[in-house]
Image 1 (cartoon, rainbow, N blue to C red):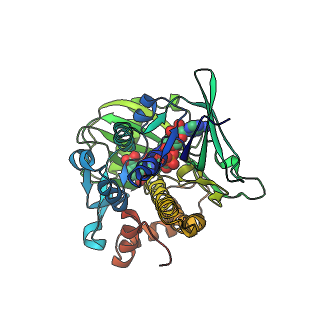
Image 2 (cartoon, rainbow, N blue to C red; image 1 turned 120 degrees about the horizontal axis):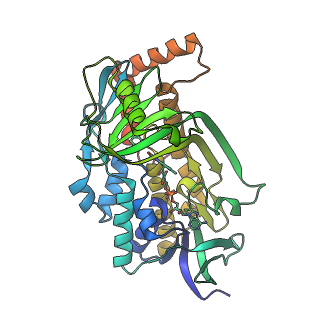
Image 3 (cartoon, rainbow, N blue to C red; image 1 turned 135 degrees about the vertical axis):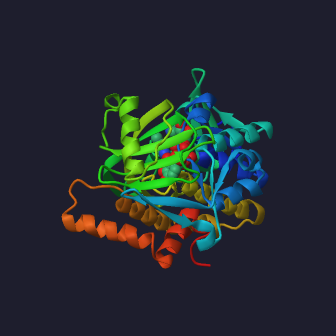
Length: 397
Ligand code: FAD
Ligand code: DHB
């Protein structure tokens, strides 16, 4: 039996679940967030780092922008480097927008603090979460804590529990459709205590593989190297990582990265993945629970923000005006933008990485594409428009 009732039960305290809970609170809608990990774990988890203009606007408009505006780094452009030659894409000039470099874990910290301060409930270290009854009108969310199973009754459940969560499997197998592409490489990522060697991000295409220079602050660099998808990190000493970064990022130039202490390193495999539909009965999927993009272009967290913004508005329309149209349209509304972003992330990935099975023709075509996209104003506008983020309400008016 359910001990109590909330309007929306949320599984997962990543950016999707936390922001949804915050947006619902602002609309006067109650929620509980149930999270498998500890607060320290989710606040220390280093992941995405680039916020689209639309994400920045959502955070500012909902009172979550103060620390981001103080500590985040506003970027008006980015650099594509091919065989050592740097070419700049000027977002401001091309599309009049910018992005903000501010770590996902900082967004998570801000949201957790805001929810707790407002009396919101986040259950950390909740194991064996279960969603039941989404086909009917009385779904429940339950979990184990302190040796006992707790159950709450909900009007709706939001599955915001990431790619490896339990929510997606609550959709019946004959309803769920999955679209997937697995890439033959991954990214070896490091966090290093050294000032970023460039004011703007550098996406480098190199014969030895892709490399990316990013950052988290004026003192902390975030750097990535294309590597085999199942690469054993033990084979990468700090010296080898720096040596490879120096080669791939600098190309032919007289330019060196300042090497510093590597404080974190790991390998991430890469895939494109979409699960449809994103709604079944009273269950809604949002963020990585429904879709994954390869990281080139930094879209993962921004897509999660887009989903929950649509969901929060639809729930608000339901509770304040009794209207179900927006809830009914949730999956289609989100999927249109998701597929547009899937296309961009796939395009950036295939353009910038090296492929072992590429023919000489493929290689020359790829170089021609990089040349075109850094030379033609029309092509640069396309890149910039997608990079700063398509409108959050992308789709038919
Ligand atoms: P998540 O952030 O995954 O949050 C889901 C939450 O649900 C987690 O806190 C998890 O602990 C919790 N959870 C899972 N299962 C359960 C359960 N059964 N019960 C309760 N809670 C559960 N994107 C970029 O743009 N750039 C990057 O550099 C980048 N790097 C990444 C590196 C890694 C290792 C990963 C995994 C992702 C990365 N991403 C990156 C993607 C980006 O971080 C995600 O798109 C973003 O986190 C999505 O937010 P989310 O809230 O949907 O999911
Ligand atoms: C970062 C990650 C990305 O995938 C990207 O395209 C740009 C920046 C980052 O972690 O900073």
